[in-house]
Length: 165
Image (tube, rainbow, N blue to C red; front, side):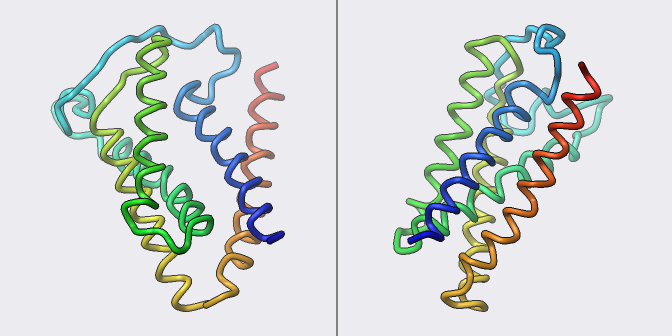
């Protein structure tokens, strides 16, 4: 049971970091953020085309950013279906994209929603593969890896704050 509590705490740290990255674009101070209210409902449309070609870096970054979400979901809901494990990634991404539009702090994009959801699905798949390999030790191993990653993430945020003061 202690492992689930650790996982929930790590998920909370991850979500805070995700909000900082997606909504606030890792910008400090917040006043310097651009005020953009834009919505794109065409997948892989104009929002990801820069200088006439698709910006794969942003697409891949959105995918990768949600892989941990799928891993955490897998850890916390092992007995649920893949759809039930994927739904939180989709809903969280939808909430963040909606918040960007409502608060005019970024462009809301269907491509981001799709890639975030696919990243969550990939994370769930990773968890399923790892649980086949490591069995009942999977959550403990992943919690240790996530603690290291979370610590490095907090260090990075601390450095960003210190540099921008």
